[in-house]
Length: 387
Image (cartoon, rainbow, N blue to C red; front, side):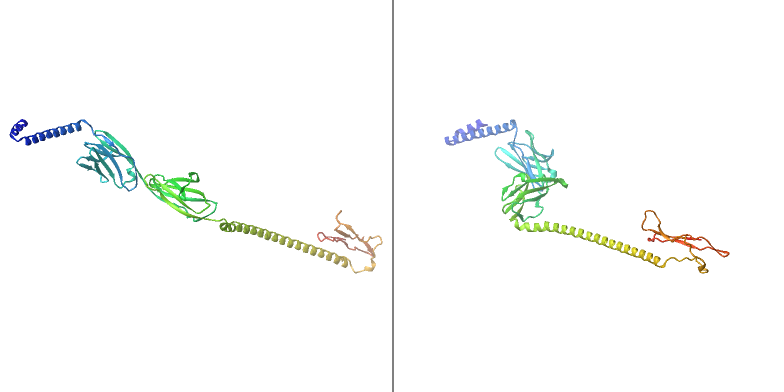
C-alpha cells in the first residue's frame, strides 16, 4: 500500500513530494513509539513510590492517608483492620462504606490515591494498608485521640513572697494520657518541681493531676499545659499570681493560730480553779459540821454528868417507917468510885456497899440498896440493885 502511494505521488511537484515523505516518516516514528510504550508497560511492573504514613487524629475529625504509585497502574485497594474499605481504578473509586472516600492527584509518571476517613471514632484505631497487586502493600497506623479539659483545682490570686505554695492542675477526659508541663512567665519549669499522676475513667479515658511546688519572689503568670500528639497546640490554663509581703499575711495567721490556743489554755485554767474551789468548800463545810457535832456531844455529856452529881441517887426500896430505928453501922463503908474498865480513864463507877439485914423487934427488915454505875460517857451505864 505504501509503495503504491509513493508511486502515485511521483507525478507531484518536488516540494510537495518532499513534504509527503516527511509526514510518512513522522507517522512511522509515532507508531513505533506507541508500540514501545505498550510493550514497556507490559514488561515493567507498577511500584509503590510512597506509602501511607502513621496519623494521629482527634476524635470526630477526618483522617487522610496517601499512596503514590508509578504509571501505569491497574488497581489500588485500601484496607482497614485487614478488610477492604475502598478500591481505586483508573476509571474511578469503588466505595463500599460512606465513611471512606478518595481524592486523587496525577503527575506525568505517578498517581496518588488519598484515602479520607470521615468523622473518626475510637473504633477506627487500626492499621491502614495500601495494596498494589503488582507490588505488595505498605501500611501505617491510625491513632484516634481525645482532647479533654484543663483547669486549676482552686484559683490562687496571691501568695506570700518567698513562701512555698502548691498549685494543682487537673486534666480530665483525655485519651491517651496527656503530657503535662508548666511555664512561669513563659519559661519552662523543671520537671523536678512538679509531680503528675494519672487515673483511668470510663470510656477508655484518663484524668491527670499535676501539682507544682512554687516559690515566687515577684508577680508571675503560671500556665499549665496539656498536650497529645493529635493536638497542634497544647491546651492551657493560666493564673496571674500577685506576690505579697509577709506582714500582710502574718497578722491573720497569728490571730488564727495563737488566739484559739490562748482561749483553750484560759478555759482549762478556769475549769481547774472551779474544781478546786468546789472541793475546798465541801471540805470546809464537812469540818465545820464535825466540829459542831463534837461540841454538841461534849456539852450534852457534861450536862448529864452535872445533873446526876447534883441530884444524887434515889433509893426506891427505902421505907420511911422507922427510919429512926435504923442507923448505919459504922462498919459500913461509904460509897466510892472505882474504874469500870482497867486502863480506861473516861469511865467511873460509883459502887454502893450492900447493907446487911438488921433485926427490929420481931421483924426482919431488909434495907434495899442499889449500886448505880455512873459513867462520864453515855455509852455504857450499869444499874445494880441489891436486896
